[in-house]
Length: 293
Image 1 (cartoon, helix red, strand yellow):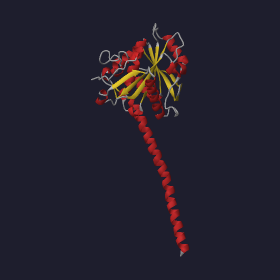
Image 2 (cartoon, helix red, strand yellow):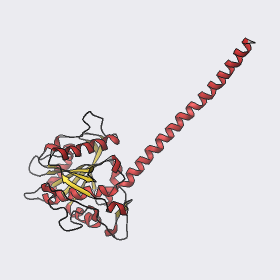
Image 3 (cartoon, one colour):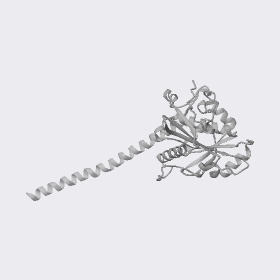
Image 4 (cartoon, one colour):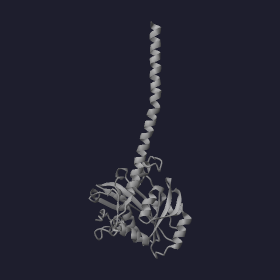
C-alpha cells in the first residue's frame, strides 16, 4: 500500500515537472516578446519626436505631436554661467544619456567633458515650472586658430575642409557646433522642446556671426535633420564621451535662414521683439513656442 502511494506520488511529480518544463520556454519567449515590443515602442516614440509634418505651405510646417498645451507651458532659459546652472545641465545630460544606454553609470550622476571649460563653449538650460527639462551647448570655432569642438576632434579633416571653404566671419566665428542637446527623461514627449533648444542655440550662433552650423547625430535622427535642410558631411564614427557612433551634419547659413523661415519654432527672431535679448549675457529669458497658424 505504501509502495503504491509512493509510485503515484512520483508519477504526479514527474507529470507536474513536465508541465513546468513546457511552461518555462513559453514564459521566457513571452518575456522576450514583451521586451522587444517595449524597445520597439520606445524607438518609435523617439523617431516620431523628430518627425516633421509636411504642409502645403513651408511656413505652416509643424513638428508632429505638438498640441495646444505645449504652447502654454511657462519656459525659462538661461546660460550656464554659474556652477548651479552648469550642474543642472550636466545632470540632465547624464540622465538622458544613461536612459538611452549611451554612457555607463557613475557615482557623480553628472556628465561633463573638457569642452565645458572652454571659453568658446556656451551651455543653455531650459526650465519648466522651476525644473530643468532641456539643455544644449554651442561650441564656437574660428578658421585661423586652434579653437576646438567635439566635431572638430572627431572629424578633423572634414571640419578643417569646411572651415577652409566657408566665408570669413571677420572678428566672429565661422562655425557653431550644436551639441549636448538633451531633454529630461520625463520631458521626452515634449517635441517642441527640441525646436526650442535649436532656437536658443541659433541665437548664440547669430551673435557670433556664424557662417555654417555643425552637429553630430545618430543615424536614425538623420531624416529629421535632412527635412529641415541639414546635409550629412561625415560617416558615423566615435564621438567624445558617448558609446554610440555619430554622423557629422552641416547647415550653411543661407540654408539655416531658410529653415528658420520654414519652421518658426526654431527661429530666434520669431515671437515678441526682444524676447531673447540678453540670453548670451546671462539674462534669464522666457521663450515660448511660436504658433504657426
